[in-house]
Length: 135
Image (cartoon, rainbow, N blue to C red; front, side, top):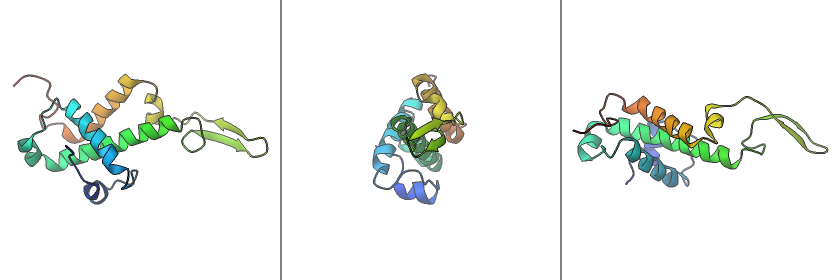
């Protein structure tokens, strides 16, 4: 069950990383990850109360998951890698050390999960949706 739409992503979240044809895939993955991070606390009542925050958290998570996937699959080419210099004749490519936060978590699932949690916290802190205790 998805928590947002492509229209919301474009018009209210102002997202521009994910194209419309790829959005359903990443929105679905983000919604599933959000369910995991919120321990299943999102329901009809919380959606009504925190709708914009939940949708923005889903969009941010979709962007993050998309970027991690893109960087992982293009880590060693000039499209996604950190190219420092490039020669044409013998095709020599040097990768720089201008790592982004995404680059730093690529090989570490624990760090990826922490980054996902931190991303969601930006939108859902103070809502009670991230509470891990028993009610």
